[in-house]
Every structure is written in C-alpha cells, then in structure tokens.
Length: 442
Length: 160
Ligand SMILES: Cc1cc2nc3c(=O)[nH]c(=O)nc-3n(C[C@H](O)[C@H](O)[C@H](O)COP(=O)(O)O)c2cc1C
Ligand code: SF4
Ligand code: FES
Image 1 (cartoon, each protein chain N blue to C red):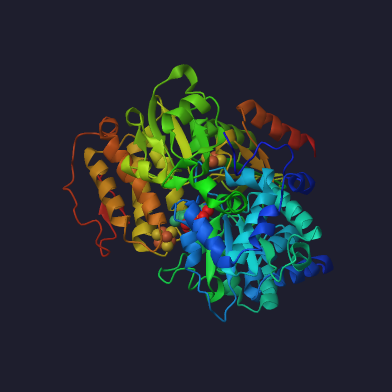
Image 2 (image 1 turned 60 degrees about the vertical axis):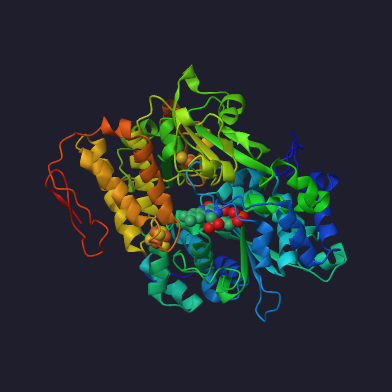
C-alpha cells in the first residue's frame, strides 16, 4: 500500500534525503500554476480536513477573499490534544519537510505571506525536531526571502512556530487564533469565519498538520490519483492512531474506509488475551463510542461512521476490552472536558461540572437510576447551546455511552429513586441541583 | 524584588516580537522565556512583561492563569507529569500515578521540601499509543511499567 504522509523512506526527515526523493518539487510545480488552479485541484482531489471535522480543504481555501487590503494568514493546527490522538507528532518527527512544502503551496494558493504553526507546548521534543527542519529549509532557500531565487518566482512566505502552553481548547480554530494573538484561548462566536475574520481580523485559513502534509503529493501526482485512493467521498490515506487494549498500538497510515475490525485485528493484532471488545471510540474521546458488538462492517471514513452513529474525528481508535470499567472511563473523560472547558458558556462550564459530580457519585457506588437520565439530560442541554464544539465533545461521550450501554450502567446504580425527577435542569436560573443523597450541587 | 530579563533573553524577545504584527502576540513566547529565567511567573515578572509588551499586568495574569504550563509557584527541579487520561488509564496509568505519589509523598501540584520534585497529573500528552507515560520536565518516558517509573525517580534522586 502506498503511503502518502509517512512514506517508508529512511531518514526522510533530513533535508538531503528529502531532496533526493523529489523533495520540494511539488512546490516548484505549484509556483508555475495559478493560485486558483491549485485550489481547484485540491478541491477535486476530495481532500478533507484531518483535524476533526473532515471539511473539504479546497473549498475552505476558496472562501478566502481574492481582493483585500489586509494581509492573509495561514494557521497550521498542531495542537494535537484530543485524547487518543498521537499522529501529528509523527509528521513533525518523520516527515517535516513535506509539511513545510505543503505550507508553502497552501500559502501561495490562498495568498498568504505568513504561516504560523501552532504546536502544543508539551511537544518540546517535536517542536525542536520541526524547528531543526525549518532552519534547514530556510538555510537552503526553500522558505523566506530566498525562495524567490530558489523557485524563480515572485512569491515568498515565512513560517513561524508558535508554542502552545497546555490548553486543549486551543486546538479549536478560533481559540487558537486568540491564543496566538496573546489572549486567553477563548473560542470566538462564528460567523464570521476565519476566512473573513481570522488572525488580527484578517482573512485566515486554518488546517491540521496532516491535511497540509497531503498537499504536495496532490500537486505532484495530480488530483485524480489522490481521489482514487480509499473511499471516494473521503479519499486518501489517514493516520489511524490505535490505542488502548490492543496488542500492537500505534499509528497506521492506510486508505480511508478501512474496516474498523481490520484495524483492530489485522493491523493492531487484536486484543490481549483474546478478550472480547466492550467498547470502541473510533475518532478520539470527543466522538460517540460504539458498542463492541456493533463494530462488524463499520468502515473508517466520515460518511460510514456517521451512518454507524459516530464520527471520524481524528481517527484515534480507542479500544476497550470486556473487563474495562466503563463508569471509570466515562468519569475520566468527563473530568477532562470539565478541566478543559474555557468557561465562556454557562451550559459547558456548569454542565461539565455537574456531569463529573454525578459520575463521581456513580463511580463511588452511590448513584441511582435517576442519575443516568440526569446525565443524558444535562448532556442534551449542553449540546447545541455553546459557542464552540467542545460542548458537543463533552456531551456526546456521556449521552451515547449511557444510551448505548444502558444495560451496563443500569447494573452500576441503585434502582431506588428517592428524589422527584427534575425536568428543567437546563434553565439557566437553576444553579442548584438536589442530588439523590440529599446534598446540593451548585 | 524587581525582575529584569538578561541581555540574551532580551535578544530572544526582540526576535519573538519580529514574528508578529502586534506586540501582544509575543506574550506566550515571552512568558516561556521568563519562566526559563525565573523558574516561575511572579508578580514582578508579569509587571515587567506588561511594560515590554505595552499591555496591562492584568492582561498578562489572565493569560498566565489560562494555561497549565505557566507556573505561578516554583515547581521542583524535576517536574513529574503523569498522564491519566483514557488511553493511559486503559494501560494502567493509575497504578503509575499512585506509585509515584507514594514514592515522592506528593499529591497533584505539590513540591517536595527539598524542591527536587514536583508532581502533576496531566491530561493526554499525545503518547496514547505508547501508554502509559510520564514526563520529567521536557522529556517523555513511554511504555512504562511501575518498576521503570520507580527507577526513573531513583536515578533522578541519585543525580543529586
Ligand atoms: C475542542 C476542539 C479541539 C480541537 N483540537 C484540534 C487539534 O488539536 N488539532 C486540529 O487540527 N484540530 C482541532 N480541532 C478542529 C479545529 O477547530 C479545526 O477544525 C481544524 O484545525 C481545521 O483543520 P482541517 O480542516 O485541516 O481539519 C478542534 C476542535 C475543537 C472543537
Ligand atoms: S463550549 Fe465550552 S469550551 Fe467552547 S467556548 Fe463555550 S465554555 Fe468555552
Ligand atoms: S491518554 Fe495518556 S498520552 Fe494520550
């Protein structure tokens, strides 16, 4: 199988090796085309974002205004903080020049002279590795002023690394831009979208690292080639990251639309001790979990997973065997979203806290059957009522885990309901919820 | 006590400023430089940064408190971070975290008396496929066993 993003070329992270393997030829070719032609090719290739939402990359670029007095920017999203995701760091380590080349082509296509790559702060090592590659690219004239000579073009752009400082929410695109501007990482209300109003109020495109790393091969080999790989509606390869209870966890680059069971049993070599699978989260902890007995025939692409009741997210597959304590898992997930909520929206800020407290109680063995309905209700009142999609990310695991594993959760709570059901927990004026044990959460 | 950046760091700040069209955008990199020099972000550090970037000290404080990697108290010489998020949890990270807690006698965000160690329970670090993990300052240790976690702590102790 052909690999696009992480090719099997030894030491391709070194600029010499990269150059010997047609490195920077994609950019060379791109600069002979018109920016619009590039956007059109990327659109036709069918490339969709690898950062979570699977939005068409070419279409997103086409939203950038053609005429504007303002500078335009490219942001490359390397915040990679979604629990279960560890793929972008492989690109930073093993194929940084293809990422840099993708940035050059993208900047040219959208008319940006400056690109910022926002990398999560904990990735000290990978930031250093990428910075080394970037310095080599600068020194060899592939980035910055010297590009004009090197590529014999009028175009040039600069690439800067911006280091995050430990906040999951900064992966959300508008939060990332606020963070880059030196503010708290608060997501912005959309619209306006970044193409109109991004960094410093200027037109901005934002893409994930993996998305951008696909660009040079698409330009080199043509959109038709790319569009024929994997699932027609979501073509190309994906870096599937498999973790949890599998024998060979890791990142596997394979075509889109792989069978989830093939990923788990063929590539990750199955579950230790040949245990059954209780639950799989197919796209990172924000995405709806699937029951282990419902994964047969499920394919890993945006449409197929939607049909199966989940989402592709970052293709971070988390596998849980039959002995997993799902209450503990959900409690930990809830703790994460509560910790990472930026606090701007009441439903998210308060709701994630309530969810965590209820799950703490269930995990301690003090939950009642009513708590399960309460969890679904609180989650339902976060979903759709917030500025950014962290609301959904916090709500989905809870809602779908309880609904899909109701039998499991039922066994973990007492059947006694000793308080009247509350059906208006979502009213903003009710900040107190009486709990089964008579205490109050505020 | 007044805080001043070293000459070298002032140069690094200059370089940071040149990357952005507005001064304020250099706040995050400048905070990292300050933390490197001063170990933590004190009130004096924030005042000095606000002066350099022409924003208020409150602007700086707002940012410092938003991000987990800026510390307002000194952390230990070896800041141990244990991920307990889902993928690590499935691979036994709670055992690792408990072991480290016990060994150092620390809880989340505490520092040993000799200031050698501090402990932080962290969210997903991007090592899910090589779980469980812990980080010492900037370095990751992956595919850990409890025994290896012990050894890491011991070898850090012996280094001093
Ligand atoms: C809470 C939250 C966290 C996110 N974290 C990331 C991230 O770490 N990396 C990323 O590329 N996209 C992340 N996204 C998605 C971005 O908002 C954005 O859609 C993406 O970077 C666009 O790039 P793409 O179109 O190439 O996928 C996150 C979204 C949300 C709501
Ligand atoms: S949904 Fe949550 S994380 Fe997103 S803006 Fe609102 S409070 Fe912040
Ligand atoms: S869950 Fe621990 S590194 Fe991802």
